[in-house]
Length: 231
Image (tube, rainbow, N blue to C red; front, side, top):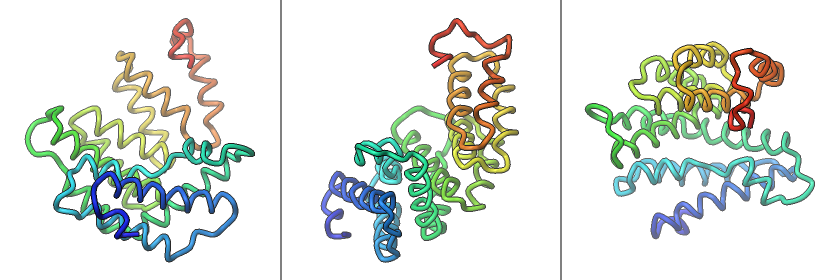
């Protein structure tokens, strides 16, 4: 596996994706995730994150493992969304447990220096930092929830605050509901940010998601005449 992905960045990324998708498809089909294959995938990811030659943007891309939608498309028929989600979360948890020290070091070592700039270098560092945070948080590591809350509270730009909130909501950690409310209060007058907030409410995996969305729709202040908001 390491030999397969070591020749150039695209091959490396494709091999990581293929290996993760194969594990996920087997898991959805009922095959337990094999420890040896998980070890190999974790080792390849660690090798990628610690590489001195690969840039931050590529490393962030490498941490973006196959989504639930991609898994469903690969299965193509008799799709069970709940089983797909459970299997993907199990994979993320297994990888996060194996990679926690590397992910923590990556997160702490990817803070852009100086004032905010939307350039390639800083954007890549922010993407890598937030990808590491996402895997730690969705993987159920307590460190991830702690770092996400701290990042949300101290963020100096919308990207970092939103990504911290997205990680918290995706894992539905103990801070999720309070931070959703805080985010809405902070950006109540910005329609584009309001759309992001709506999307996060809809993706939350907690049992209260349907009543919460019903309450949002019932609020007299909700712009029901806006098709994008309703979508």
